[in-house]
Image (spheres, rainbow, N blue to C red):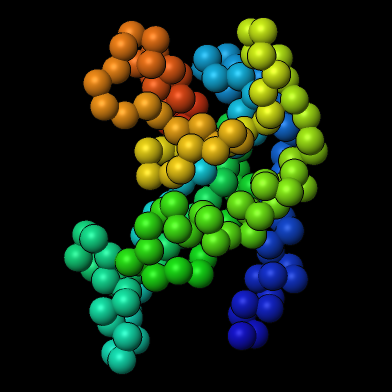
Length: 167
């Protein structure tokens, strides 16, 4: 607990922060996806599972883990992290039960701003992969057989995600 307290009081404020939202949005717009405030994804962190609860921690890949959810900006800088659920949890479940989801729903994580995309007003949104549920402020790729416009949308969305985690 001493290490956790030290990380929270000394390191956390230097590592996790909301950067310049306008720069993040400009970068995502240049990649073909306007009004994107960040990219969300989950990953498995390998752990030694508690012996009495091993079955709860085994993930679909066959090893013991905890789920780490990350919201990153255009540079890959963490804007929010969440670790609570075992490796058995699905990304969408982790997200729906996170403080980030509650803040995005309430409009308190980002300042509330709507943007004109073509002739439509759209809220600031985040970009997620197909594991997430489609929400007005969480864009995810189309699935199934795609027409050219949906395929192009998926390509732009994918570029935004890859750019955030590639730098």
